[in-house]
Every structure is written in C-alpha cells, then in structure tokens.
Image 1 (cartoon, rainbow, N blue to C red):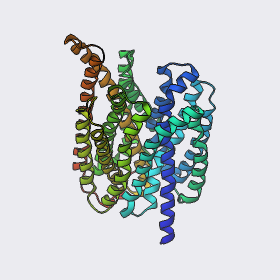
Image 2 (image 1 turned 90 degrees about the vertical axis):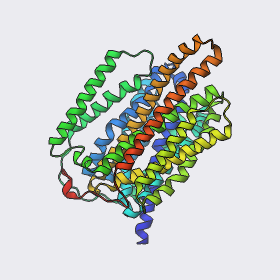
Image 3 (image 1 turned 135 degrees about the vertical axis):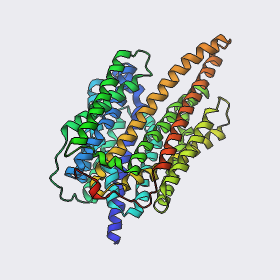
Image 4 (image 1 turned 30 degrees about the vertical axis):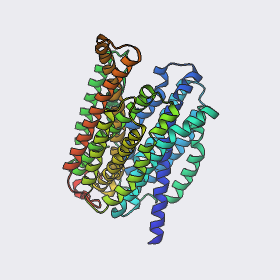
Amino acid sequence: MKIIQKNSRLTVATVALGTFMTCFDINATNVALPLIQSGFQTTISVVQWVVVAYLLTLCATQLTFGRVSDLYGLKKIYVLGFIGFTLSSLLCGLAPDIVVLIIFRVIQALSGSMMMATGSAIVSNAVAPENRGKALSTTAIAVAVATCAGPVIGGFMTDWFGWNSIFFINIPIGILGTILAMRNIQKDGSKAGAKFDPIGSVLIMLALVLILLPLDMLSKTTVNPILVAASLIVGIAALVAFIFYEMKCDHPILDLNLFKNRIFTTANFAAVFFYMCEFMLVFISPYYLQQQRMLSVSVSGLMMLPMSLAMMIMAPISGAISDKFDSRFISCTGMGILGLAVIAFSTFHANTPTVLLLIVFAVTGMGAGMFHTPNNSAVMGSVPAFSRGVAGATLGTMRNIGMVLGEATSAALMSYTINHATTIFATKGLVGAALQQAAFSQAMVVVCMVSAACALVALLLSLVRGKNKGGAVLKESQIKGA
C-alpha cells in the first residue's frame, strides 16, 4: 500500500511539473511580446498571433487528444506531449522570423494540448476517489505558481538574456519531465478496438476556431464586420453539424451521453463562466495599475501576487474538504467570494489605499482557489475511468474557451466603453488626464459588473449540479462508444 501511495504522489508531481511548464510558458510569453515585436520589426497585429495561435490551438485540439488518449493510452499521449513541447520550445527559441515562430508556437500548443488533455485523467486514475480533490489541487497550485513566476521570471530573463530564453528554459524542464513521466506514470492498459472519429475531430476544431477567432477580434479598431459575421455563422453551423454527427456516430470523439450527467454538464459550464470572470479581472487589472496608479510593469506584477498566493494556499484546502463533504457548496462559496471581490474592485480609483487593493486581490485568489479544485474533482469524479481522457479534455477545452471569451469580452467592453465615455465626459468639460481617468473608471465598472455576472452564473450552475462527494460516477451502461 505504501508503494502505491508513493507512486501516486510521484505521478501527481510529474503531472504538476507538466502543468507548470505549459502555464509558465503562456505567462512568460505575454511579457516578452514587446521585445519579440521589436526584434522581428513587426506590428502588434502580427505579434499577437504568437499568443492567439497558441490559445486557439489549445482550445480546438484538446477534445481530439482526449479521445485519442482514451483509445491509445494516457501515458503514451502525455509522454509524446512532453517530448513535443520540449523540442518545439527549442525551435521557437531558434525561430529566424515571426512567421516561423508562430508556426512553431502552433506545434508547441499541439504538444501542450496533449498534456493538458490527459493530465487530470492521469491524476484521477492514480489516486483513490477519496483523495482525488487533494491530488487535483496540486495541479491547481502548479497553475498558481506558474501565474506568479511567469511574468516575473519571464520579465527578468527577457531583459537579461533576450526573448529566446523564455523558450530555452523549457528544455531542461522538459527533459526532466519526460524522464519522470516515463518512469512514474502507470502503464497503459489494454484498449478495446474502438475507432477514431476524424470527421468529428475536424468539425469541432473548425467550429471552435471560427467562433473564438472573431470574438477575439471584436476589440480591434479595424475589423471587417462581414468577415466576423461570416466566421461566426460558419462556426455555429459547424458546431451544430458536430453535435448531430456525434449523436449518430458509433465511435464519437465526444460521447454526448456524458452530458446526460448533471454534475458533468453543470460543472463544465460553470468552469467556462469561472474562467471568464477570472480573466476579465486579470485583463483589466494591469491597465488599472499602470494607467490609473501609474505603476511600472514589474511593480504591477508584484501587486497582483497576493491573488496567486492565496489561490496556492486555498486550492489544497478546498480540495481536501471536497473529498469529504458536498463539493458544490464549497464551489458556490468560492464563486460568491470571487464575485464580491470583483464588485469591490470596480469601486477602486487612483487613490485607493494600497493595503485595500492587496486585500481584494488576496480575497479574489481565495475565492478562485475554493472553486477551482472542487469543481475539477466533480467533473473527473462524475465519469468512469475509461472516459476520463475525454472528460479531462472537455474540462480543459471549457477552461480555454472561458479564457479566450473573458479576454475578448473585456477587451471589447473596455474599448467600446472608453470611446463612448470619453465623448460624454468631454462634453462635460473634462480634458487631459482627468478625462482619461474618468473614461477608464467607467469602463472598469462595466467590465467588473459583467465579470461579477459571470461569477453569479457559475455559482448558480454549481448550486444546481447535485450532490457530489468522493467521486460518484456514471455507470458503464450509461456510456456508449467505450
């Protein structure tokens, strides 16, 4: 029994390392974008694809890799993802121009998607149901640490060694992680002779890209409305076609019967609104800190540190509690705290006491930590072991959809509100810095109110999902296409 427990801990630690590497890369790359832009002498509209292409690829491919892992083995896909992420990081650092860098970033995202799609399933399979929440909290801590370390370490490395270094640092981590994954993750068992679903895979990729890409473009000043509308229409049509095809497919990439389980469905959609809420706040905060309070980039990052630290502390506590008690009430409490913190943030101005700002950031992280782990545990505990690859991939897809929607919504709201408010306040005699601050304050209120509304939706979804403790699962007879 002690050997099993030790192996389980090593497995969880290995997955946490992979989670840290992929999340660190996202945060560090954002910091390096200005230097990448100047280094390749390109425009903001082009260099943003270093991030956008990565996120869209993550969103579009996780369901595919989740199904592939259920068919061919979680360990195989995870190890291949680690190897691919390491090699593509080397290629990103050596990229001779911006186009090649974006291509290598897509390859890197494909590898990261393989890891993200399988990580939660590997952890869930490695531990007993009564310890699932505690184990999954380790990956939540890895995300929080990466969120803390990414901007800070990435900023210093970019200043000292150039933007290439943020990719090169993945190489030793990736080599270590690959060795640990090969040694510590349990071997894949024999698989049934199910078939892959290429049509469903293409349809869901097409749908997600065509829907999310125009939403991400809404905040841009030069957007072709006809192109945006056409993309959304085709994307929605592809999504509808995907749903109907999957309902009739003998071996679907996403077994829609999973969504007959109320816990699985509500917890996944709660994750979408949670990440929308969180990323809307994460998007608006640097603008507030740098444009309203006139803080430097490095100081702004330090001001937001309590958010990640509080999440690191709360995630394992809420995970352990969710293993013993009904997790929906823990998730609801977390979302309630997060929503109230966002509303409090909307009232801040340039002279708000720093201590109060730090407290609100800490409370925000506490609420996020209380929601994140119990909700993930509810999803992974609501499906049988043979569907955990798809379940983890579904959760990962929902997470990335929430991130993209949160960033796109906040950017669009902020752009529109600032332009509208500037016109109104200018007629009232405001000029210069006073006009800019008044317009931004109005935009911050709008973004925060929408963010709080997302928190409320996530709370209600968590409340109605039903009782979940210790991982009650679907019966195999309820799942087709095993």
